[in-house]
Amino acid sequence: MTNQASVSVSDERAKTALPSDHPPVRFGKVGVLIVNLGTPDATSYWPMRRYLREFLSDRRVIEWSRFLWYPILYGIVLMTRPGKSGKAYEEIWNHEKNESPLRTITRSQSEKLAELLKPEGGRVQVDWAMRYGTPSIRSRLEALKDDGCDRILVFPLYPQYSAATTATVNDEVCRALLEMRWQPAIRTVPPYHDDPVYIDALVQSVSDHLKTVDFVPDKILTSFHGIPQSYFKKGDPYHCHCHKTARLMREQAGWDGDKLMLTFQSRFGPEEWLQPYTDKTVEALAKDGVENVAVMNPGFVADCLETLEEIAGEAGEIFEENGGKNFTHIPCLNDSDLGMRVIEHVVRRELSGWL
Image 1 (cartoon, rainbow, N blue to C red):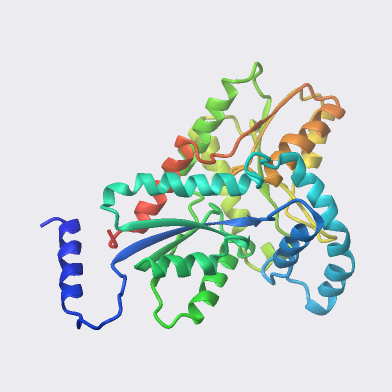
Image 2 (tube, rainbow, N blue to C red):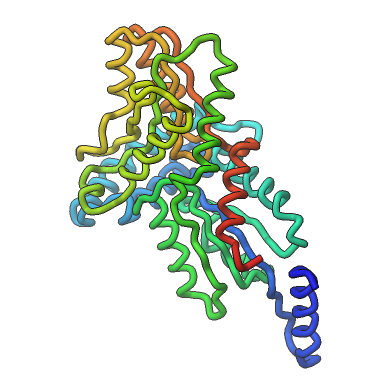
């Protein structure tokens, strides 16, 4: 008897064993919830403020004392940053769907993953959520549970682990479980920064993209989102994960040691962050006479504000303004065939024993 047939027979026996007056109970399915960072619902002031307030109030993101941070957050940041961030989002906004590219891509990843898992006989339900903003993790966990998923795999879409990303997704999952009487069994996806399928997809994406431009880059930058140096010193493994990803890419592609460079972007506040900084590196390369540069973002599973506006836009301008000639941004894996190959591979690996 196949696994699928065994599940069907088991479900039918359970149903027939219930008393005739028993309320309907849905169970026996496996859920997969992919989770990305978050997105505002619109680019205007109040939606941006709601999103930034939720994001910047997270103790995993800003580890300062609340007595020090909240007066700054509510007195300065939330007064000025929503307008500035809203203008930046407006430059990359998907006006056709009236949403951010991150929402568009994450939804598509979920839909494509559901198609890839269809051969499992309809037993797997796939959904998506945002850690900050909508749809919330709590709402989608509840929806999967109500749909009969008594086992759920939560997939924080971060290849490299950090407390400010992966851990805060897991925190929110646990908070939701605290309020559930009938909890589903939960698994969470570990970091996959050194997974061969992931590394191969990154290297292939570079090769595919460079075929579309009319120059050969002198340098390829792998730009990762930064974290404060203090987080790293407290034991966050993110810095090490980023370096291992870059090293494995270099080895897989056979590039010279100085062909591929690792940098960090998106610093915020007065603290010192992981270095070297992407913007300063791009500027220095241009001033040193490097004419051709390509930048990619291996730590981002989907293109978003930090990749499209900060790198494809701002970093490109910095390079050209300081004497650089050719600049190209290599898109994230997104919902491409390469990207979906990685997501499906990780999901199937982590569902082992449940399917």
